[in-house]
Length: 144
Image (tube, rainbow, N blue to C red; front, side, top):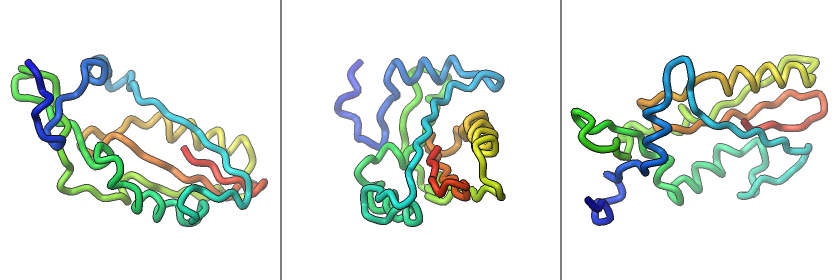
């Protein structure tokens, strides 16, 4: 069965993505995370810097429609789940900011990153999140 003629807003998950979804359990989430560290004054693409990162994301979100889509299971699991547009998409549910309390040291950052990455993604929404961590003594900004 080919799915190539289905519209983008109703596209089945790839076999690999479906495998990750099927293998995931509440006690063993299979989410993947990345940590980026920006030196003070680093310009983020879009020219807004860390302060305006939400603006950069909002301006470019249309370039990757998948970021506005969530997973919907097919009734009776007759096929792989499909990607569907999230009619209630809210960028504020995906981009968060955290301000570390002084002293803003590496131990606080590690604890915050572990907390962020240990929380499973909400499958009722598009499966991505960005957390901007500020307040580091060094002036660096971290994006998780």
